[in-house]
Length: 234
Image (cartoon, rainbow, N blue to C red):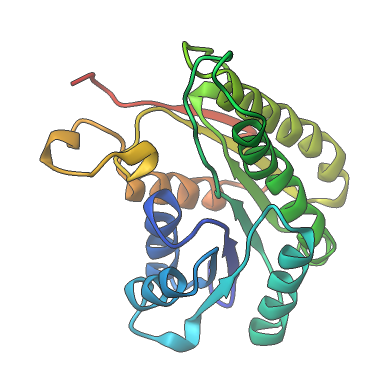
């Protein structure tokens, strides 16, 4: 069912984004991944598939709307269409609110919230053509607040609200919109170094398989907001 389909994954050079990209590419989906650093993008492309004709690496910062417009243009030039968009790029800075700087706040809001808007804004006309799918990767922090999380919580609460409102707007064009809210995932996020001690956590490929399950669902169904957490704690 995925023959000739094209997916764009922001923040696709490591962690969740890279794991999702590998799973989608394994299903024959042509994949474009973006990241801020050229060397990371090039490394990710080599990891995603041995067939370089089916993978496109793009240097883009989701905080810059022109970058995202350019990313979509590159995808169309290379693959001619865009079917699935996974807005995954994100960042977390965890400090008490009185220690959180204006720069810290702007970094999280502009990446985690404004960034997913820019990605959708740049791609929505193509998704109208393909009757495609837009999925944002939020977090359980989008519904559960915690100490030292004021900026991160604000960005992720906003991301959930934005995506759900976009879902209502865009289903009139047969575009399906969903947000996935993971708990603890084994990635390099927030300085973590994945190891055997993280075996209890959600793995990036688990989220890739979840996205595949969503894409395979009968078109009459729309799982619009999905919470996913480890089955057990440490």
